[in-house]
Image (tube, rainbow, N blue to C red; front, side, top):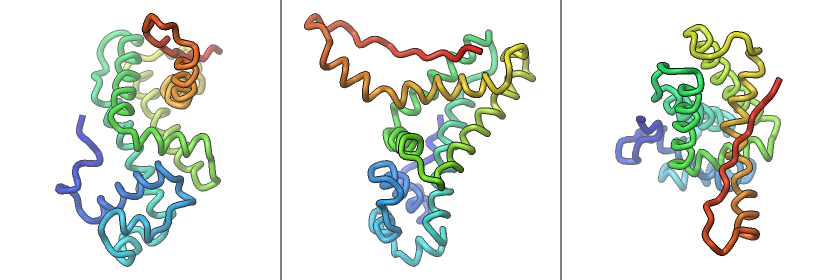
Length: 195
């Protein structure tokens, strides 16, 4: 999978600013990060941040697009061949791998979903639309069920992919408290959505 973020050596100042904003928003939350802090983290002037993004809202939109690109590339790294269960499983695995490799993406999503601000509804809308387009594509390709409601399929994908992400810290903490001394592997979380 291509890295939507790339490396700082390969990036324009605009991309470095966007990446610095993602890292800071993920760590502290958007409301606690100033444009000046983003500029300092990116190694540019405040004026350059304002030139490229105008406002914090413009910068947040760019970060939301980057997060969407991470998901898009993860999902599209999986061919649409095989049974519906195989394709779904492979796509979920690709998203899990992408999230494991990109902790800033995980933290950004956690903050956006668990500490929602009215401005962050656009992020959730963007992710829902991405999932909707993938569900429709798979339905038309004959890979996803057409007897199950589209809305239920969208919710199921989001719950599978975000449920584990959001509950993982709690599971890790509880497991450390109750795990047996024999180093038994931590249980794997699975979440399903029934109609």
